[in-house]
Length: 268
Image (cartoon, rainbow, N blue to C red):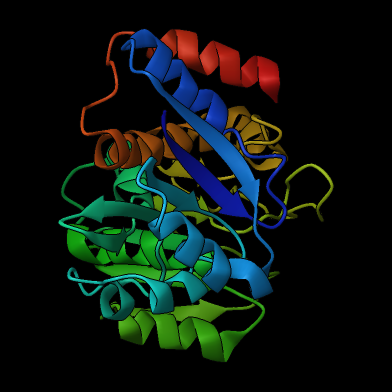
């Protein structure tokens, strides 16, 4: 039976198997999708072994492998230079190809013309790369990064050709049309994200890529202020849909998203 996987360390928390197996069942595709723990020192051996397995269709990649995986697969789309992180590996013409579905997954809920608009991104880690790439392609006029490592954050702005600035994590927010939390802050078991959203205008969007809990303190505050809130399931499902087509050669069903969201909420 053909199969695909999600790899990372840790990996037991991943909801990717639930999503992909839900779609496989709906489409009556004889395949499996599972989680597989891969330690950093074992990444090379994992790729070598799976490449020899003709039933293996590819994998999604989560922390801490999104950058390291670049050295083990082909990169015809120049993801290494453009985004600097991969999260989906798939077979094509006898090669293992790496790409990044996080960009499309992040951008889908806010798709539109962002020229002339301002954004705030919290964090300068791996997930930030896909977000900044999407904002640069959408034409964002100015991006402020709130980060602990100012030098790293400035480097990211330069890499993606974005006009902007870097502020400390505890700095008061400037006015912006969009605020994105790209860190694990606020996730169950992690440090809280202490931030005051009141400087944002009433039509601002607050987007938290964290999905455990689904309603983070950040999103609860946004709702109290009547700001538009987007939770982490939108990006999770969106990036999974792009990866599913690459891994299994067909689009996921589009008429059962409410059912999928209910299953994911129940599993959180």
